[in-house]
Length: 63
Image (cartoon, rainbow, N blue to C red; front, side, top):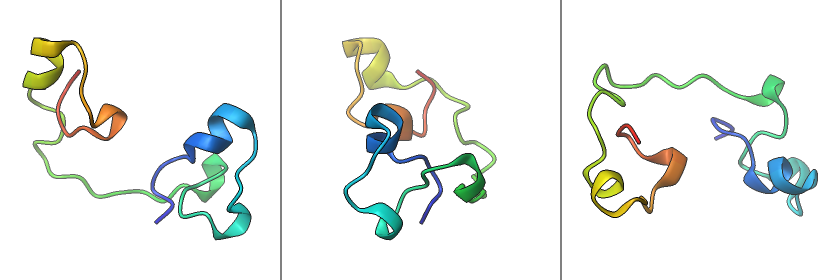
């Protein structure tokens, strides 16, 4: 909950969910996330083989 910025807000400057949105609309709303120590320490096989990854920024691997 509110651990990453709302993509709609970032791209359009507005969000149809308003205050009920599960994503943050400002840096101030962002909550810190405790990540596993190995988070983003290995290359994403899918990204390097196909040039794209279905998880995008949410991928746990390096692009």
